Every structure is written in structure tokens, then in C-alpha cells.
Image (cartoon, rainbow, N blue to C red; front, side):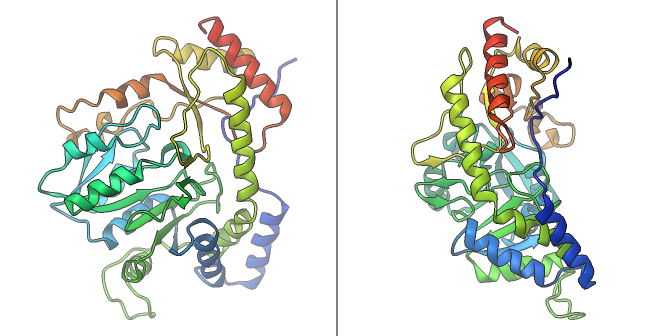
Length: 367
């Protein structure tokens, strides 16, 4: 009998979300309206206390508009990791600025401050760390570096809803931050993103940019975009917000169980003071065995995996023009070795047992 595959990710959408959508549909008010306003207030209060939140139509839009609002544009450079989803560097390029790629710390998979320091030039305006897989970047060292060099700090928190560093929420360290609400993220609005900032001026500028450059209808103050979130999506997000704390607890419990029981593989370390929210639970496998290992998990055990990300941004055809002859050894090594295992909150005890048995068996057999 073929076992049902345990997926690497599984969006959790229930009757409450369906009822919330139906409620909004019945009002006839579908575009940005009271649901969006309520979602923004609740998101900030729960996940980034003290910040202002501005809802947009995607995580990429959140990054793009946050950068634009902060004044990033042609002639500027922004230091970013190459080991991340392309949206990070895309958002910089879309402003007319140039993404400058730096290497990662091999433990956290986040920006290495020493590599960032070496990448700064006279044109650098900002540093944009990614809290990859839900682990906070080293915001203390990056913040000190940004302050010392007179640079903006912009956070890509797309994968890190609820992550903390020394008790402080990600999304609160930089001048501006961006979260994604894509279906596979730790919470979703169906599709969407959120910008957070403590700066009223930046918040107002993001609000203008998302809505054709106007705050008052037909009183356009600048050239903007149609990047609004709908009330339908906000209604989904508001329900998900009420559940994210429990889902995060389950993700962390699942990760702890994997940490304790996996053998023969390097489990993901967590930096002192960091609260990892495990958007992904990412291990390393010898590069020569990685693909066979993932195939064996899927074909022989019915355990789905993901490789995030097999090609670093500085080697993508769309972005390699910004990289030149760049050597990022830890980035390249991670791209060859990483495998993400299921850690999502819908895993059952039997699922965890199978994942552990499968990984240990495949690791001991050399895939």
C-alpha cells in the first residue's frame, strides 16, 4: 500500500477563514477597506509591537515599496544575501538601485556581517538582511555596522513572523521591514504582504505608493502603484493572526523533536538569544548525496522535502549582471547541501516518527 506523502509545506485554511471571506463578500466592500485597516492594527500589535503596519498585495511589493519609501533609487547600492529567494534582490533592482551580494553565516544561513562590511562602497545606502527560514539575522552586529557607516537597515522578514532576538521582534530593528503572507508562509492572507516601520513619514509614503500615490481620492501626490490588499485577503489574515501563536508553538515543538531524534545529519543550530520560528527546518547533506537523499525520502518513505535555494541569486541569469566575478563560498556550499524537512504545524506524531525513521535510515545508508 502506497503511503500518503507528507508534504514539505501545507497551508492551513479552515472553516473560520472560509466564513470570514463569505462575510466580506456579503458586504459588497471588497477592495481595501475596514478589514485591511483592522488587519494592519492587529498585525502590528501581535507581531511587531510599537510599529505601524501597512498591508500590500505581496511580500515582494512590501520589500519594493519599503525601499522606495526609504528613498532607495537609481545610483544606490543595497547589500543583500545571495542565499535567498530572488524577490529580495529583485525588489532592490526594481527601485533602480543595484543589489550587492554578500556571503552568509554557515550556521544561521543569514548575512555574515564581516562579508557585508567588505561589500560596502561609497554608493551603499542600505543593508537588507533576510531572516532566512525563520531564524533572526545577526541584527546586533548588522545594526552596529549600519550605524557606523551611516546606512539604512531594511529587514526582509518574509519567513519570520514572530521570530525574536533578545526578546525583540523581527521587523522592529530596521527603518522598515517586509513580511510575506504567501500561502506557504507561517501565516497567510491567501496572497499579500505587510510593511512595518516606526517612522510615521515612511508609513505615510508606503500608503501613498500602494494606492496610485494618493491618500485622498483623486488627489495624487506622487506616482504610485496599485499594490493594495483586498478586504477579502485581509479577512483571511485576521483569522490566521489568532492562530499563529499556537502554530509557532507546534513548529518549535516539531523542530525540537527532530533535533533530539535525528542522527547522522547536522540539525540547524540556533544562535544565543534567538527565537527561531522554523518556516523551514533545514539540514545539510553532503553535496554528492543531497539529491539522492531527497529522492529516497520521497520515493521510499513518502516524505516530501524542499531545496531552498538550489541556485544562489548571484548565479541566476536575471541577477548575475549585478554580481560580476563574485566568490561567495558559504553561499555556494549551502546551495549544494541544504534540504528542508517537513516541520509545519499539521504534522502528526506518526508523521514525525516517519520523518525521523526515514532521515536516519537514508543518512546511515548514504542515501
